[in-house]
Length: 131
Image (cartoon, rainbow, N blue to C red; front, top):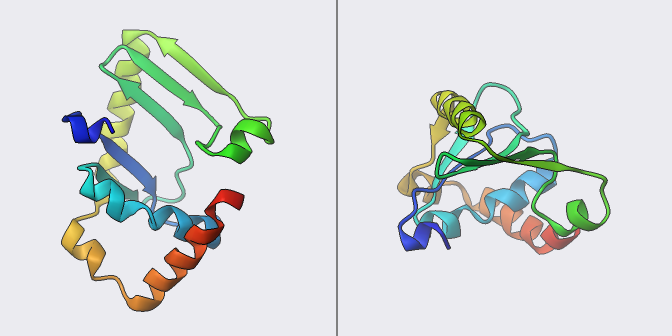
């Protein structure tokens, strides 16, 4: 929604999965995100599992919780919220550093992935509410 309203939204996802089923489910949403104008990057230096958001250089959230029902209702995960420009700035700097170690997903390249991969993503998407 934010991207559709003109906000610059950038998302770094792991380039290497820890769970293939969850990973394929996540990737199944990339087309919609790109259609909305979200810039998607895949992290290439190992496995990045961080959950960080910064907004307007003054708000930041960092924690372990995924944005899904299981994390909110069943897992004991936590996210800390900061209204602090210094912390937000440090996290934005780290995000920019991580972007340099990530591959930008161009829409035309994303659409060229093979049929089998698209099939796995579609099947995994059906299970996404359970993951």
